[in-house]
Image (cartoon, rainbow, N blue to C red; front, side, top):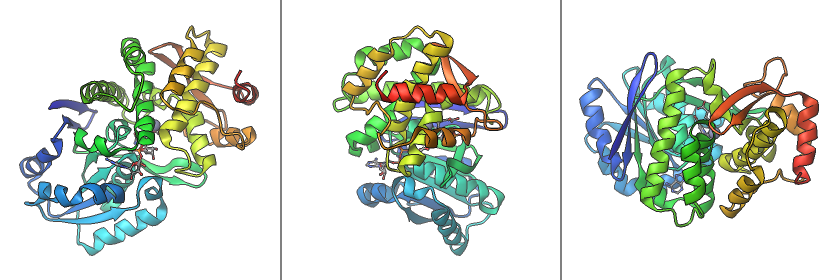
Length: 360
Ligand SMILES: NC(=O)c1ccc[n+]([C@@H]2O[C@H](COP(=O)([O-])OP(=O)(O)OC[C@H]3O[C@@H](n4cnc5c(N)ncnc54)[C@H](O)[C@@H]3O)[C@@H](O)[C@H]2O)c1
Ligand SMILES: O=C(O)C(=O)C[C@@H](O)[C@H](O)[C@H](O)COP(=O)(O)O
Ligand SMILES: [Zn+2]
């Protein structure tokens, strides 16, 4: 078992990573949260179907109620948010109660947002069950989607702890493994050239990724995420670099209809686009063609879906949270591991989208 500590200005919490990590949750609550009156467990329905029968023993000495949330992006809606708050009120949760999120990034974001707003904020614990959630469970960004933009209604609310039990990852589909791995690649590209090079040379398939290698990649990804969060919890500066690939990625997700393309698949295309922009604007010396081919070998789609209009993507990007007064900002790289935030004009974006689409 590996334990990392994430420390922000006002909060510090453990991230326990490894097979069987879930068995530490109950003792953690009993030892560190003695005043907890009641617990609302919010669990992804697919995860509940596969695991809940065995999992509930891990909470047997605690008072809890379980809310089974729709799987995936369907969870990050106003309707589900509203329904859960009603459920928690009926179950008599109070200010000394606790929320536990069990699921991928969608459930973590939703449950964290519930926790951050219920009675103006109660604590929560993250139990991530996807590869992608190595990113989402750490750092305290919690949100639901709005039809006009991804994660538009949210807040910053750090968890009390993260228990990342890697046994969950065994039941992930290949598509979800791929989606999650895009964020691991992102962490390498924005912060650690050596880590990126290791992934590039050692990873040729996501189907047969050894648990040991996966565990080491995820641990490094979490360390990198934690460094950015510790330096800039509320995204006033360097935390924006964690948004590499997301300016276009979020626009694709919204245009495809949330859940139409997975988050990681969209971010993968967004990263290729940002790398091409980095070559054009900042003379980045990097073989983007080789990177694209690697992603293709791993099974990623590397182009924007044909039917999506570039003007609509641009409109979405102008509403991105990093944009100021409609000025679109992209995280670009001056070299691998060295990100910067750059204003990019509408003309350049449309020009690059056109050439990107043609495979240029
Ligand atoms: N808060 C953050 O910092 C942050 C960071 C990255 C991404 N995100 C958000 O995370 C979300 C994506 O997260 P995700 O990729 O984990 O997706 P997800 O939560 O939608 O889960 C993906 C799919 O996998 C299923 N699933 C989950 N765990 C499983 C398991 N162990 N076995 C089998 N199936 C399982 C789910 O039911 C769902 O169908 C997006 O909404 C994205 O915006 C947030
Ligand atoms: O933690 C962050 O900061 C990130 O940007 C991590 C991203 O991978 C994640 O998708 C995040 O939810 C995006 O945030 P947003 O502010 O662009 O909605
Ligand atoms: Zn992301």
